Image 1 (cartoon, rainbow, N blue to C red):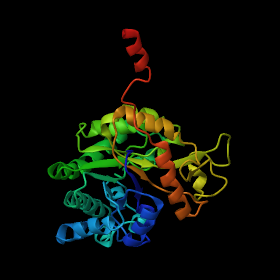
Image 2 (image 1 turned 180 degrees about the horizontal axis):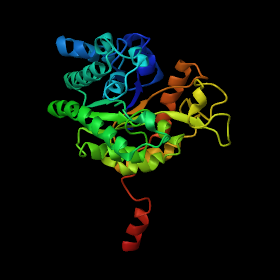
Image 3 (image 1 turned 60 degrees about the horizontal axis):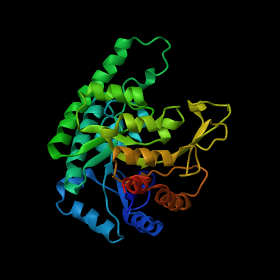
Length: 336
């Protein structure tokens, strides 16, 4: 029996959960990774209505599905970000409030604490999401960035997230950052620094998503090996990047996804540049046995076709590690 194959519902939040559950079951999924937006998982209803979490389980069970994780990327983004008008479009009204940046950040932090408590009530042990970053905009160092400014950025991240992670500890849930451009950690080096800023506390780990590492030129297999004890969840997501120079580079040229001038773009699983066999081999080596959650994005493909083929792809590429050396029989013969 392989790992559970789930579908992240964030890109499907325009559909009612029951509609998506019926579709996901027909495509062959084992469960859903519930996004905390749309009608898929409501953090406050989970905390205020004793029947709500059981109702989510009952709805999924009608279609033979389970849930192993929830995700609150949108609110997490606002915890550390310099807040601007873009955030209003992704945040619940009660988090946005009057839009005062520091007020938004503080309300986002409280919402992430509530998310940890809601996850515990649902009976899952992982919340995936983003952290935001107060220093991402300083990525390219001109005018030169004082190293002390970067130190302050990581210190601000720790100051804002440690109280959130205290609640995660209290309720026995872990937070898994999806390492990603625009976050405090977007490659191996910054992931190490984020862990250091938090004192390597166990409540904080990673939602591994190779698509956000590959096009940057980051070794995503080394990421798994380096953070073997911090891989709390896995997103299966593919990305294509060009083998030759293009009209825009890694930074994207302000072009929308799907534009042919891009150097890279997200693709349906198996149709991009990520080496998923090596990922499975490393997941086996580090002992990860949690869900393989499809995060489906492809501007050039109908999403229902893509979600169905992605489920089949994950089942085909996943395999269990060997429990016996392939040459053990020869050793036994020699002993005789």
